[in-house]
Image 1: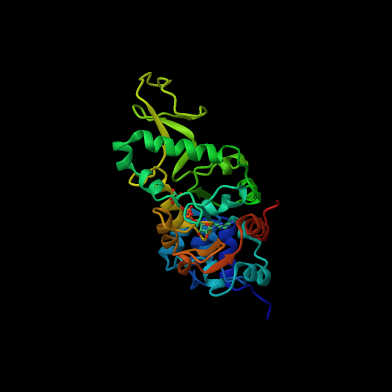
Image 2: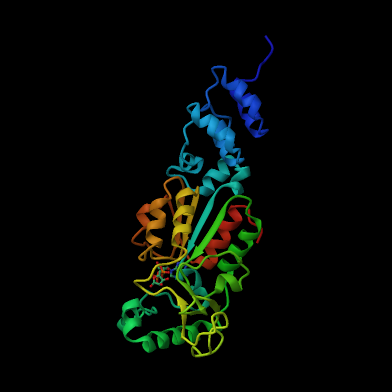
Length: 323
Ligand code: APR
């Protein structure tokens, strides 16, 4: 009796070849769309990862469950390192990766975090001043706070964690979004080109009349008219104060909800929208890199306790990024 291939492997091959006709023909047999190949991945999993849209819909219509991320199935209590060791996951760098960074990633670069004992919010006034309501009442004090922070961050340089994420941006084959809460511009200085800044950036100013954003290069905020609308309404720092909406919010929420691997680096998870992002990543294996436990540590599958400039390059190498 010649050895024949199980129908589902024909199904998975048809999916990998993006052969809609073949998939349709196979669906006429009793082939289950949820059978798995030797790596535990269904035809639907392959269709989604190979972005075969029409085939994915066809398989879902024929009972294919949009299963949770294979990472979550595989890891359970395991770590990503164990999954990779046991299965040598070849196409891990195609999965949807979402990374959120906070002040902790810049600690090694000499920028204090906000909530540590000698942190930027240590002075009770600072957090009270960095609010929209205070900006309306006393604009000058808010701008002075920004001038002080800008001075403190000016000469700082990226560390190995920032450079590792810049390398990741160059090499990752799947969907990737790295968002930062930081206003220090160190991701950009390290070579990352596509890191949306949830809270804006201290090296930028914004025209309050037309919203045009430009580089803030002077020490204080100059009163030069806006080069776009020519009005002489004052510029403001292009940061998001407490009580203001982050324009990058929606996009970050969507990406977090769709990702398969979620990594939070150096954030206390105390501020929206950051703390809601990890709660949205239901389909993902979630990793937290931090020197301490945080308010949201319980939401993560895996915690890497350590300093970002050491742990982030290690994790990127594990993900196959050449640093
Ligand atoms: N490596 C990794 N994590 C670190 C390191 C380090 N070297 N040093 C400190 N941490 C961790 C701290 O344990 C803490 O959990 O970084 C986190 C920094 O937390 P916060 O100071 O609260 O900063 P962040 O989470 O980025 O704050 C978010 O709040 O005040 C607003 O706009 C401000 O963007 C900021 C937002």
